Length: 206
Image 1 (cartoon, rainbow, N blue to C red):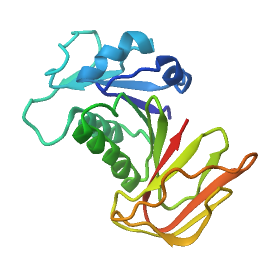
Image 2: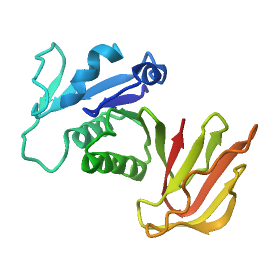
Image 3: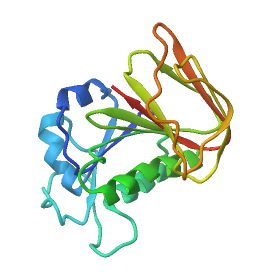
Image 4: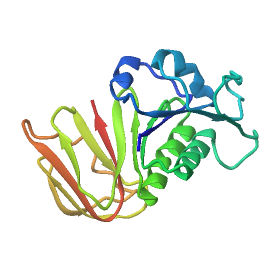
């Protein structure tokens, strides 16, 4: 099944970089303010969702779900839940990291939500890629300048890092002490990250 791309309303500077990550078969959901990116991304929506408080309803000949302004789910969270209902297994989120720190953190938590349902989720912004490390090992090649491992879920034990400048064996990272920031893949190597208990946010910096 094709991947679901969810577009939020945060600013995007490097459209060309983002477009290189897009596949022809991707299904696009635009969330309210994310519609401002439609022209520069060059992709029409398969679905539009939102309360249209930050972008007017374009009234396109496209399936549109209009949400109330007062609700528990953000437009982006609703879009993710709707896509899960429709059977999507792989997700790319763009335009979800921006000036509003509260929205950014809420959107990053979507990666945990997707992981809890066994779905694959990645956030891409102008500077980095973000994903969750949980049951399966994750590999990082040396094309990235840095990578960081952050505990955003409360428990992360039995952490192993190999192929990196700062290796780790059976480590623990807590929310109170985030020492896994700005590691580097050794030149010509591929770093490997494993977590035996809990989950970590992996940030790969270009």
